[in-house]
Structure formats: C-alpha cells, structure tokens
Image 1 (tube, one colour):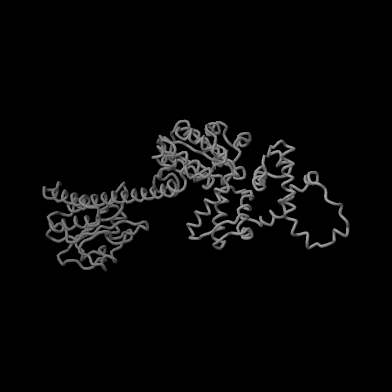
Image 2 (spheres, rainbow, N blue to C red; image 1 turned 135 degrees about the vertical axis):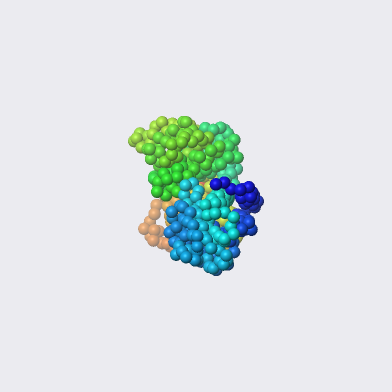
Length: 531
C-alpha cells in the first residue's frame, strides 16, 4: 500500500526541516510536531541505544523534565525495549489493556489509545527506537503508521550520523591543529637549531643541500643530540613543508601495537579495533614521517617497512585493500646498525635503503664552541618561563663549560631548568652547582683537574731547592695561599711544553696530558696561550 500525496509531502517537509539547521535535536522535535499537527500521532519520542545497551531519551515532544528523566528502557523492557531487542516493530492497540505498556513517561492525552515502537536501524544494527502514542483520529492504519515511523526514524538517524561524523572530524582537525602548533611551530624550526661549531656548520650545509629533495635521510647520533630537531628542519626546508609532519618513536610502543601505529588497522582487526584507524604512513601522505629509534623494530616490520619504501604502498592490519602513499621518510637511531647487520639483527637491504643520506650528529663534548651558546639560550628561556632574573658568575660558567655533558643537549636543557628553579635570583656561584649537576662536579674539578698536568711538569719546570725535613714541617698554614696559583702556573707550563713537543697539534698534546681535546681547548683559551 502506498502513501497518499499528502504523506509524501509531509515526509519531504520533515526532510527539509532536518537540513535547515545544525541543531539536530531541535529539528527532530520540529519534525515530530509536524506529525502531530497533521494528526498522525499524539506524542512522539526518539530513544538512542548507549554503550551499556540502555535506551536513553534523545528527543521528544510534550514531555516534562521529570518524564524525560524517567524515560529509559533496558533491552527487552516494555514495548520500547522489545522493539530494540528484537529489531521488529511492536504495536499495542490498546495501552489500557497491555502489560507491555509500562507508562514510564506518564499519563498521556485521554484520546491516546495505541502505542507503536519502531526500531531505528543503521548499517544493519539497531541504534535506537522511535515511538508514538496514537489517537483514534490518525489517518493511517497500523501498518501505514509503522512504515511512516520507519521512514521518519531513518531520516532522524541519518541526520544524527552526519552530525556525529561532523563532530568527530572537527575534533580530529582541532587535535591536528594543536599537534602542528605544539610540534611544528614551536622552537623546532631550522633557524632555531643552535650551533656555530665547525661540525654543526657542516651539518647545516648538508641540510640545505639534501632537504629540498625527497631522499630518505638517516640521522645518527647519541641520545639527546637533537635528532628530532634535524628531522623537523628537513621537513621545514623541503617542498613538503605545507604537508603533514608526523613523528613516531618506535621504541616507545610495544611490538604488538607498533604495526597498527605505522600502517593502521581495519575495524575488527583485533579485539579493541572498534573502528578503522589510519596509521602514521597514511596520515603523513604528502608530507614527512620521522621514525625515531628505527633500530628497535622487529624483523617482520623491517620487511613491511622495506616494501613501503620501495613501492610506496601497504595494507592496513586486518585489511586486504592496498593503500598508496607519498611519504618522505626521515629515520633516526643511536644504535650501530652496521654491527646489527653483521649479527643478522637488521636487514642489510633495509639498511642500504635507509642510509641514502646519512647525517651524523656530533655529541656535545665535540661541540665545545656551542656549549656556552646553549647554556645562555636555555637559561634565558627558563628564566622567562619561571619569571626569574639570574646570571652565571665567571667561575660557575667555567665549571659548566668543563662538564662533559654525557646526556648531550637534553641533559644540558634539563640541568639549566633545574638551575633556574633551585638557585636563588642574582649571580649563580660555583658552590650552587653542587645541587644542579648530577654529582659533586665542582669538588671533582678542583681536585682532579690539575692531575693530568702533574707528571709532565716535573721535566718542564726548573727544580726547586732540595726539600729539608724541617722545611716540610714548617709553616704548613702558609702553603695553602700559594697552592692554587702554583698549580695553575704548572698546568700552563705543562700545556705549552706538550704543544711544543707535538708541534701545536692539540689532540696529541691532550692525549699526552691525559685531557680531552675539548678540555685542552678550554685551557688554551683560559691561559691565553698563543699557538
């Protein structure tokens, strides 16, 4: 049996109302009022099934606030719950003579004699129920009113689905916007990589050459040397700078989840896969993907990574559809990949595919010229963040410059924040660094620093008068004031002698004195030795 023209016209009018505004609940209730105005029903309600399988009232007409709170149904409870549980319409011809009509929503108009509950189905699943109280004057019979409510319920649920999709996409866009703001537009721009040492200038020159290409880059260096900053600089200098920049630390995610994070998964691929999710390769399409700790991925993932680098295609976990992607890969590691290849722990073909453009970042102990710049940069940054005004005394700066920084830039950054937080405002003195550095470095410095110079000075300094036992025990208190100056003089003479013996080659002179190249460079500047 077909609808008359007026029913078709009414359905069209409801559809127009649903499309007229973004307030979906209000438009649904307007559609219900249109049905009431034409005497098709007395009262109408739309219930949605929540995650606990309980029908909650979403929209209705002619209900008080108290009635709205009461109107919830479990699956199989009353006519409304039966319609949701069975997926079939439930019709009660006389509500006064049926135990299935629970009357949770209270007494209706005395003219209401019937009740119809129709399941709302979307994607072959029940998502809710639309119900109506009917009077004796409705122009349709029960079959027709069930059909009418089925169509109206589909219109309502379709509009809700569009709204929910819109809200979800808006949230994703907001999250992506925050991601870009925090990660890309913070201090990770190329011009903010601090360094003027020879090795860093070589890195910058290489970046300017290779970043505009699509070549795969392998960034290598110790932990804390700034590999992520280099990857961001590569992206910002490339033709993909307006595309996405996605990052993933392969060592921070369990082996079972890493494949899903990289390639995504289909709905139902595993227990918690309630919906399809895109992986990092798919999210980075048209942009750059940075994979940190690439040496930690498993053999099975190495095979899939090699394929995507060669073919630019992959399948999501649990899926069979091949997904094409256009991604520029920047990988990073602090592990010895060559040794791993020899041991069979890392695929040789993948190693060569990743190592197209190698960038080796020097540790901070080999960037002596940059240490002071970094100290000043991070001190200013954290003073601004914590609203403090401080400065380093010359001796405190010397101690920080002489510290080896085994944790590289990350350790230096954390140390400077600790310094700003712990030390009082004003000038920071050397003794205050005992609470900042990871061990009592000041004490170690004062006692151990002269030692490397002790042995060679015996040959390079004119011998003093032969000691007498009496002199050795005389005036012990007077020996302390001259010790520091004497040791510095001996140290300076030792360095000069070592430089002469090694023809001015600092690395050889440092090895002879038991120093590092960085330490001897600092001493040469400290004592103003002309080489």
